Length: 121
Image (cartoon, rainbow, N blue to C red; front, side):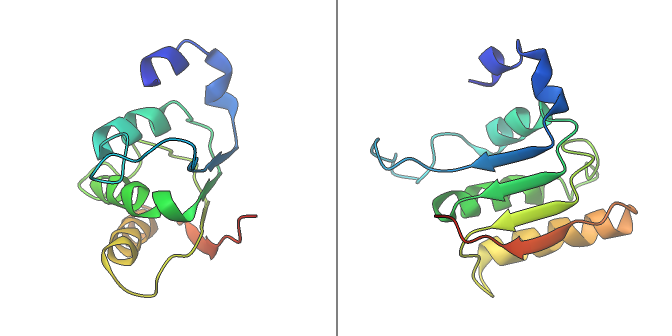
């Protein structure tokens, strides 16, 4: 999918992106169709992205992908991101820890990201 989408030059100008799961297809056993590196490859295409919205079922895998950006790569992917809207993020747990780590790293780099609850309808 990333390879196909990389052929679309206007993606680099997208400022708002909603990533929502579809209930139409059965999920793989690990709950995701893509691993964290594939998600980061996809998000890398959106270099002007300012607001990212993630539906509840995808929060854990997107959080895990964003955690990877805390390892010296905080500004490599989605460098202009300023708002992260997550549906149903729990106050504690692995996803919350990953997001907190990502947000702290971005804060230290001088490019803060605000996290908001997203009520997806």
